[in-house]
Length: 308
Picture 1 (cartoon, one colour):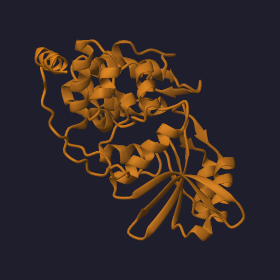
Picture 2 (tube, helix red, strand yellow):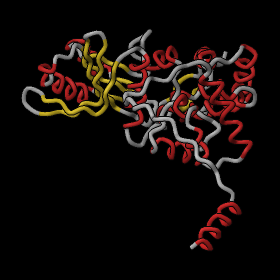
Picture 3 (cartoon, one colour):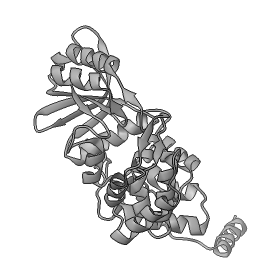
């Protein structure tokens, strides 16, 4: 009996197709049972040895997009996070929003004095008297690895920052950790968070629980439009949902704009975005001006001139 076809991963490695994994990822996206069957059938029809995992993803996503854009967006979550680059700052903001969603007060890009030198820390968060610091490592590929050298470097920084009084120091990536990085970090107490680690509380599972999504999941927007929004500081779908002016600046066609709002509503639902750190002073109510017609104004100016 012939086994399942062998797929080519982005790294060039081969892996056996597992229908169970495909079904699980489709179910996490919120697809219904008939939609899952439709997507699996679409993949099965084109499945063969040498097919890339990217092609499998695109086939399944197209099958979902026909009926449910929000489900298609959730299905593409891992790739959407990879598109938060090329700089790592949008990824840092996204990770910070997950901690904010759990009630932490978060600061980004903080400079702290260590025992010997000053450090710039990606995330500095506090909640209930507990303080955590985090270093984020963005990876543009799903198979992007964070190795032992990075773990050693981050732990050395954590040791120098002990006088700041933090309780936890995290190394966060959207990629994966090597076995040596996992073993070393476990031994020295460095906390790790990656796409699939730790089991039960991984980055993917935290995103699922929070319901927060980066704007790069939106199939209604092109890549250059997402980059334009990221440069302006919009990272979360909830932020874009409240920013009609930013959407207007994209100059989308009416059908595309309607699709975008429908997709945002389907994704965001009742989720609540993190409260902004900046407190705005209340504005005084604007005074109402009495509008004057052109003709009335001209008559008054003419009467004034004649009186002179």
